[in-house]
Amino acid sequence: MLVLHALTGDSHLTGPAGPGHPTAGWWAELVGPGRALDTDRWYVVAPNVLGGCQGSTGPSSAAPDGRPWGSRFPFLTQRDQVAAEVLLADALGIDRWALVVGGSMGGMRALEWAVAHPGRVGALLVLATAAAASAEQIAHASTQVHAIRADPGWHGGDYHHLPPGGGPHRGLGLARRLAQITYRSESELAARFGRDPQYGEDPWRGGRFAVESYLDHHAAKLAHRFDAGSYVVLNEAMNAHDLGRGRGGTAAALRRAAVPALVAAVDSDRLYPPAQQAELAALLPDADAARVIRSPYGHDGFLLEAGQVAPLFAELLPAARPRVHRP
Image (cartoon, rainbow, N blue to C red; front, side, top):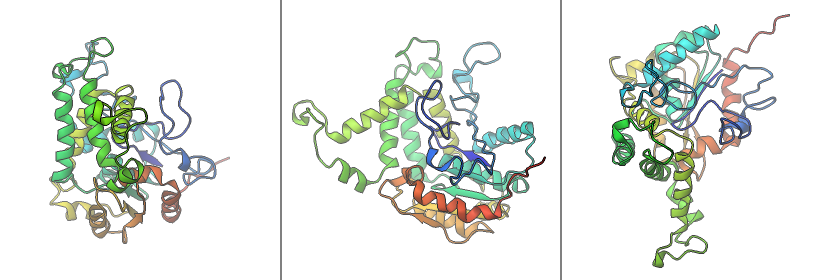
């Protein structure tokens, strides 16, 4: 199985935090013996995305001259990233994945796999994603990119030689604040924080509201584990996402994906609204109506609602091919 991570995810699909992994696995509840992705039955491969900063080559990686790529790193599309994943599959000797699954940005790449390489995809599961980035999604992402590039520490993308704190960490933190708002729903933020002040602080005297502290936490957390250059590259790749480009449009492109498919939406997702998943389900030749994950958590519901995501695998996996045990 091929599991494709979202924007700031990585290959650490399951397991505790530790050296090289500052956070626990992002889908740990779903992966392991006896779980939805049963590792007693399936091999599970979760690669880092090309352009990222958690293993695969990205702006912070060393170029052939020994210096970080920085501003010299090329513009990427989801198709470029899938081309790299195809090379990975070839290197591993995998001719056909039993299942390709991804949510959000990972869902974009999963769709690209099914459209460009349907013969190598046994089944397809995509969550909270779209056939093409919408104007609003491009607006959200480009605003975050501008926040990073406006940071004096950006230096045109060539900041990796600077000491800790010298790069665009403030811009990256602002980008994360902007993104975090879109990842959650208004109703969840209202129920969780309301207008409450942060404990021990007074917003009328320079203090913060509780929701501001929440955003500050996520900003600092990302700035300590993620490269701003990768954040820019990956957001621009998401903005470029369009399955129909050069393929006669979205409908024609999705007709190529003649594989058993299941599409899932999060009912409170305001970043990738359910109408986009309904379109995918209607246009994929071997999919029926989109499944709905009911969650107060917005777009992040596909990561947090393991109890509702697990049955999706159970529904689709009979169409996938398990590994063959040989003596």
